[in-house]
Every structure is written in C-alpha cells, then in structure tokens.
Length: 443
DNA sequence: TAATATGATTGAGT
DNA sequence: ACTCAATCATATTA
Image (cartoon, rainbow, N blue to C red; front, side):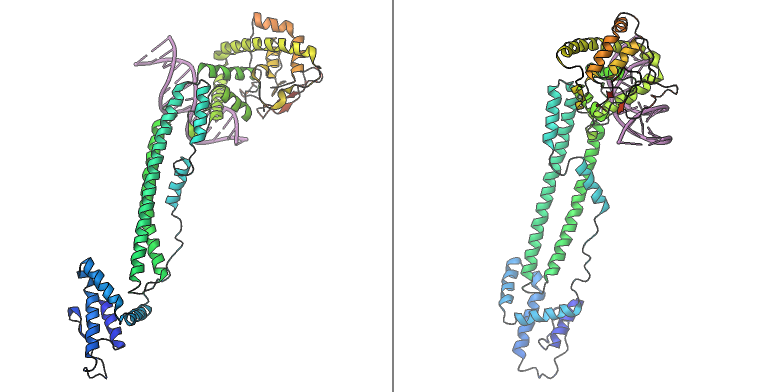
C-alpha cells in the first residue's frame, strides 16, 4: 500500500493522474489545471491504473487479455519510464548482493564423504569387478567375495538412488529457474527488471535447491554409514584366512624368523599368494594391510609364548628344509651348466619363498649353530652362495631332517624384541664364506 | 558353552 | 609410517 501511495504521488508529480483509485486513496488535484480539457486523459490513466491494481483479481485469460491491452496501450512507454524513475528513487535495486557465499563446511564434509565412499564422483566399478574376478580365479573362499559383492551391490544401489534423485532435483531446479526467468522477462516488459535482479533471483532459487540437495546428501551419507556398519565392521564380520593362506604366511614367518618384517613388496606378494587380494575391509584397500596385521599379531604372539609355537616352528622349519632340498637339487643341476659366479636373477625384487635367503640361516640353526645377530636381514642371497653353503652343511642338514630340529628364535634379543628391527636392506654377514653378500632385494 | 584362536583396531612410542 | 602392546569381537574347538 505504501508503494501504491508513492506511485500515485509520483504519477501526480508528473501530472498524469489525479483521480481516486481503489481503496479511496485520493491524490491532490493537479495544480494549474482547470480540470476540463484533460478530463479524458485523466479518465484514461485512471482506468489503466485501476486495471493494474485489479489485475490480480482476474482470471488468467482475462488478465492475459488485459495485459496485452496494456502492453499495446499508447501510454505504456510513459508509464514504464515512470516506473523506472520510481524504482531509481526508491532504491529497490539490489544492494550489495552478497554474492560468493562461502562454501558451507557441512556441505563440503558431506561431499567429501560421498566422494570417499564412491557414491559421488566417477564410477569405479571396473577395478573392483576385476579384483573380484581375480579373487574368484585364484580360488579364494567365495564367502568373502560374496559378502563383498553384496556390499558393492547395496552401495551401487545407494549410488544409483542418489544420482537419480540428484538429477531430479537438478532438473526441477532448472525448470523452475527457467520458468521464473521467463516470468521475469515477460514482466520486464511492463515493469523495470534489471538483469542483475534476475540473476539474484536465480541464485536464490539455486540456494534453496542446494539446501534440498544437502538433505539428500545427508540421508545418503547416513545410508552409507549404516551399510558400512552392517557389512564392513571387520570386527563383527571377522573371517579366518584360509588354511592355505595361513600356511604361506607361516612359511614366510618362520623362514624369516630372524627378521619377520616383510617389505611392502613382500607383503603384496604374500597377499597375492594368499588370495587375500581383497581385504576384509575394502575401504582400506588392504591386502597388504591384512598381511601387516597378520605379521603384527604373529610377532607379538610368538614372542609372548615361544614355547607354544615351538612345534609349529619346527614343522615349518622342516617344511622349509624339504623345499630347500629341492631347490638345492635344482640349483646343483643348474650350477653344472652355469658359471658359479653368475649372480642370481632373484634380485629382481620379487621374493621367492622357498629360495629366500633366510633359508640358509634356517639351515644353520637347524645345524645347532648359534648365529645370534649375525644374519639379520638376510633374506635373499645369490643362489650360488646358498648352494655353496648348503652343500658345505649337508651333514647338518640331514640331521635336521632326521632328528631334532629345535628352531630357536635367534632373531630375538634379550629384551624380547627382534633386535635391529630396522629395515633390513643390505647386510653383509660376517659369518659367511668369502664373497657372499646378502642383497635382500625383497626389502 | 566355556576356552581358545584369530583378525582387526586403537593408542602410544619411535 | 611403522611397530608394539593391549584389547575387542568374532570364529573355532573341546
């Protein structure tokens, strides 16, 4: 109403109108007019104003017709310029529209989480499918992968819902925006609307829609969290490794008893061999993680109660010895045709379980010799060296197989820790024969 | 069903 | 970043 009064006054100011309009608002009669020769015009303007004011009471069709009429009215340009002037004066235009609204931290958090969970962002189904296929091919216990695919299916379901909803919202937002823009553009023919105002309106609409989107994101996050807690709480869904996997891990452990700290590569290799390419917890991408866990647990549990593990140790020592025997036999044959000084190609980085350098150490210990601290970090050595040593120890080796292979934790120091647990990169053993350098490339 | 085994997590230390 | 030690929560076994 205030607005109307102002408009009326303004109109009066430019001496275009003077009649009372709806609601009994009276304008002062124009000065300097006798009220006779301009009567028709006044009537005219009054009519127009009346039409404007009552336009909302009319039906759409009616209004449309009226609108058209007004648009074509000869006084329309004048009225429009008046409205422009009023607008200028009243300063209704956008003032300091605070653009660049700072990114909402909560929204950012949600976005990050959705991205991390693989709900938003690029589809990464190919990799996981390949991993699953690999696991299946490796003959891993289907149990784990089934659970996995279940989880993945549910996750992708959530993902799909999220995306369709998001799309819907975006579409609705766009539709509404264009609708409003069209409306404003249409209205801009009869009232002054600057492009900035349209822009502002659009940003308001977008903000509203993004707040709706945030709700969607929030509920999606919740759904993912619930799914995670159901399917991926590793503690609740613990699965024992397969016997084969434990075997492989134990073999490695006992054949590297002096330094049971597999390198990253070794861990990966072990994980692959053990078919735990997919960890219990896919969020950790962790085959090597599981291997690390296993070794961490094993080290501590072994150390805590060596006696309890003695039997197991002996078992694996014997196993290792047998494997070594085969390896030696093969190596002997090889050495007959190859130069004995040729370095082993095993230094390529991949660890070779049955031939790993600690084998040699195992043999020495099986022999009853004490090499406390002498072989730390000796994992892979030249096959020729192994050959030489093993051959020179043949008697003890036989003893080990036949009799009393007490497997002692020679790597353990007095404090109960694996002394010198530093990364065993390349250690020269002082107790070895001439020219034998342990180059532990698996570390 | 209790006892034990085991994979994962957590917090401190380096 | 990695390990250790303690602990948790579940799996397996007796």
